Image (cartoon, helix red, strand yellow):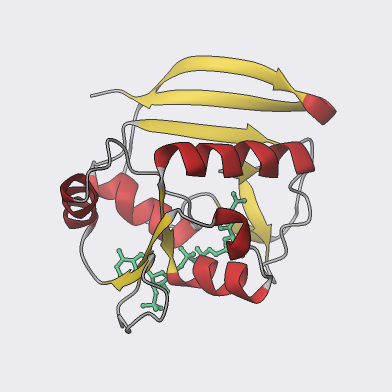
Length: 165
Ligand SMILES: NC(=O)c1ccc[n+]([C@@H]2O[C@H](COP(=O)([O-])OP(=O)(O)OC[C@H]3O[C@@H](n4cnc5c(N)ncnc54)[C@H](OP(=O)(O)O)[C@@H]3O)[C@@H](O)[C@H]2O)c1
């Protein structure tokens, strides 16, 4: 996830122009490596509208929604499966890892379900006063262990946390 210093992932209107080119490049590379992305319906709609999906050609896209619809793209699946069900589905499809890519509502439901092992935060040197948070307001507490911290281009920092079980 690309985050501001105060834990925002987008402005209130969904704008993500704080995300640097280097951040996008890394994200696209990781998505291609994992071969899949799990995202909330709002994130999917936003990426589709912005024409960003073409940068992820060949990547299996699982869109979580309470109202699944048929997809015209065989690589895109709309599903109302629960987080564990999605992990099992991707496992069945032969993937070794699932890349959960937001937004905040989806992140919270996956974290709450206990299926997250690793958290990667690409912290951009920006503060956004009002926006969409990394996790929507849900009742859960998750303890993390710092597994890595790396300085990135443009004064950003990549943080890698492991969920402490
Ligand atoms: N900075 C970053 O790295 C980053 C990454 C991703 C997204 N974003 C930004 O985040 C914003 C969107 O985040 P958001 O929190 O508003 O929405 P979101 O998590 O992308 O999508 C929320 C929608 O996903 C579906 N959903 C999520 N969890 C579900 C569950 N457990 N069961 C059933 N349906 C579920 C629901 O769809 P239905 O309403 O269809 O039922 C819900 O309304 C966008 O502005 C996007 O640009 C930023």
